Length: 203
Image (tube, rainbow, N blue to C red; front, side, top):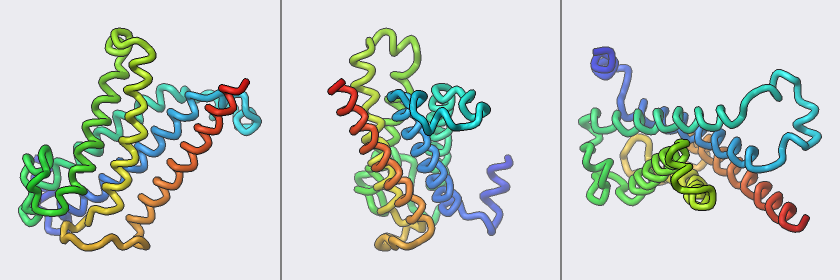
């Protein structure tokens, strides 16, 4: 009922709201990935971590990492569901699931679809009972999909026209700049994580 009222309000456009939720999902996924990379290292032994206030060091980063994955998934689903509710978008729910014949930028929509499937796969395989069945090594290999998930989602956000008018990317647009910042943050975090891996294998 509330959703119907909001969508019928002329000041709220479902496509614009969808774009906003997609940006939020991108930021949350970025935070989730950075947390995951931190957890996979000995970050608690670094001087930077040791100098932080006790209240921050008391935060359970593993739980926060897990919760941010669920939050990101929620925003991704909301981002998707809103688009077909806007008749002007010409999208159907099938176009989201199988975007080969989507009315706008089908290849870019496909990036978003793949990233959603990858995110769901990572979340499902992280459940304790599934993880125990898979074994650590297989679970770890599957979990590496999360790197590809973020790449796909960031590229999707950068190249997709939020107004669904098939316009080229405006690289200095505020929304695109936010996606660019997330992409740069992920790239830097990945480089640092890789350097840590090289360092740890040489010890």
